[in-house]
Length: 320
Image (cartoon, rainbow, N blue to C red; front, top):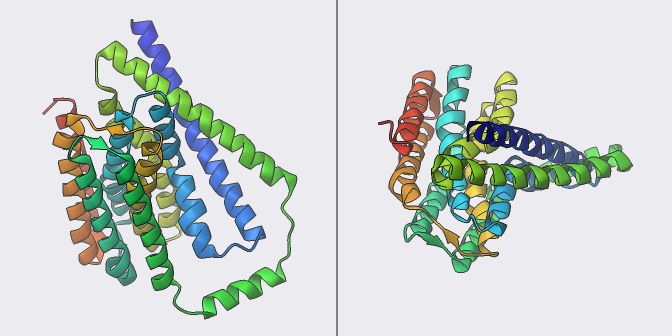
């Protein structure tokens, strides 16, 4: 049993590493391709970058649904969204000292995050996430993209500058770009497949619900791309990107990552997610909203975020 458990933990760690690195390569080279093909920066941001950083959650959820482990999906989404706010938000504010929050994020993105989170919680409350609810979340993401597009790109000057820049640099996509994108897609699929398989085996050996592992271990692992993006943004003192990254990722997870697997099969939501994880998601979102309204996230708030996350893990595994 011990050797078997060690084997599957190693498989889990390796699969998660392959999944995250493949998603990173996919994002980097898809972004390069988008720029070469003159795709507007906003579209790259809300599609390629948003998809790339959330690909680990999305593919893990799709594979879990195909393996009839549908409880992993909601656990992964709720757990990732909690980790994004409490771990990434907390770590970033401690590292930066203080994170300034742009006014546009408070006026537009933060209310949208609160609204999407409220819709997600409502859909999970009955213990099942259906095809119809998937349609609702897909439409919600569409509204988010359109609204963001109109608010953040209201002037034509940005587009004329972009057009001028793209006219100056005419470049053809190299075969290497397409090869890396294809290979990274293969890596994402294999990484997600073995991640789910390892979680299923570990939960069986330890007699722990797979959702408990998904809401904690998988959630932390699949949130690593967001952590890397935030770390790079802090080094460049681009604090708006840190907050925007958390908000954008949480909205994408709650809408697209929940919606797509629900088109394959209805998603089961375990009671531990409703009774433990959802209340912590509410707490995390409210705290994040208050920090946003203050226009600053201080390091002591980051430490509080981290403490709350530890309490969440303790509650989840009955340590507290």
